[in-house]
Image (tube, rainbow, N blue to C red):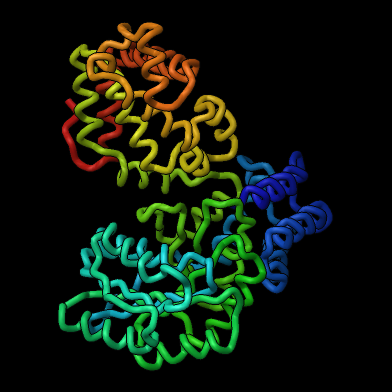
Length: 454
């Protein structure tokens, strides 16, 4: 997300290099380029005008600190204004209400409402320790109710049964009664969407709101929708009096305009951002971090938090002790590392959070380790016998043919994996000498949950 905007803004800011002072003359063209970059990213015109004027007013005449170049000073101003534009850091949902707290999700068809309902249920269960009931009133889209039922089972939430022949209001009333009787903390109400805003759609969500009185009314918006997202946000806010926004598909090839426009247009905070298809791919919206990513500064804090949440600390500790005691790093250990990388969304998801100046080198070092490549590599190791994983030196030509056939790849791909493994094994042996690996693990201990790396 934001790749195009990041590229244009970086190019624009580069023009200030070597200047000793920011003046109206030497920043005029840069501000114009910033305006164009934002418009191309589908940021709403009124938002662009307000933002550009705020940047220009702050930048003109600003003395450049001795340690900063004008470009860096201007980036600081742009970063602060981008952060201000997107609002305050999200604190999550407001659950200070009588149980069950009803949270309604509304938006256009295809925005990701049902998927977001499942993600939000998981977030509430794991982060807030809440008992959650999911209910769908989308009786128009084929298999929508079944999809939500499947998601409920995956994340450990309750599900209120519904039939496609029932009226949405009847489903919602019955689900609310069920949530009350069974002492659910939160009821997530997934509503129907349309391909565009229409009177029938607005009337239905309006009736549901009047009947169920949801405590939170969230607009789910596709970050790739551009100006359509802004128009839809305005229409839904007029009908529902929204309390917040969920921005979806932020991992896609999005221009990013929705993230910068929706909050200004609705006056409502962006609460969550969806960063992938998996049920755990939901983050609290942090404007300062998003602004950093837009300007190529990366989002290292989110990366650290992701590692804290998704790296298996016990396995990491076990591996450190194993190698520290002189035992060899084997292919089973490599398989564990590849699977952890898969859980974190693969190399692309991790590289996206690094500062721009580090991404190129990191991507080169990582090679073509995309999601499919990771899956194939795990498949190759799965096709080996336990003995072969412990003793890769046993894998001769005939064994390679068997492994390749069993994992559905060509022999050269098996050879590449074995070569990569050999290099990793040598690196691990070097780190183990003199306790270097143990010291590294102790250094990580402050960033991981409590554990004893000794």
